[in-house]
Length: 176
Image (cartoon, rainbow, N blue to C red; front, side):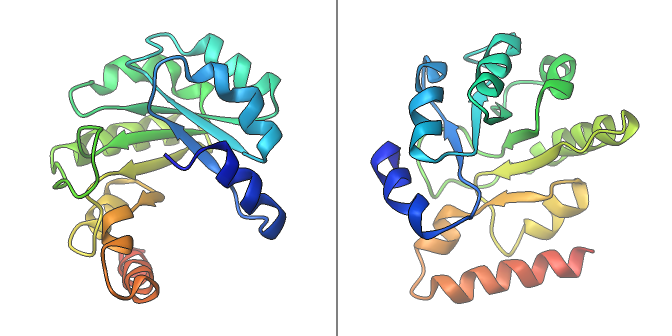
């Protein structure tokens, strides 16, 4: 929802990694403009690309890392054949749409399945949990195998976002 102009504006002032989670139809159309704006990585939904091989090839052709996101109803078995294509697998812990939704606990099992696959195949794939992440569940997500977390509402719907991030980081360190 931030878009290309925001990436273009922020890129000159930071070297932080910009991963663009493209929750849309035809996300591959935006790979080249996103890279030109300064993006480092793109993530597409398996539900849009049931076989994401072509999308992965397109991302890499644009010098972008590639991620695959899966919605809550999509089983691990649907993404399993494509995990090796991805730099990151994103397990959605809410149904895509709006911020502030409650974390779906059953998604922790999917995180475990992805982590087991990654480790058993000697991959360096990141595993991200997106949706409903907060201090009450980030440790469980970490323990299940996630190493990247999206905590939008937890951070941005609080009077002190810096403190919210510090609290989440503290919970992650507790999990290690």
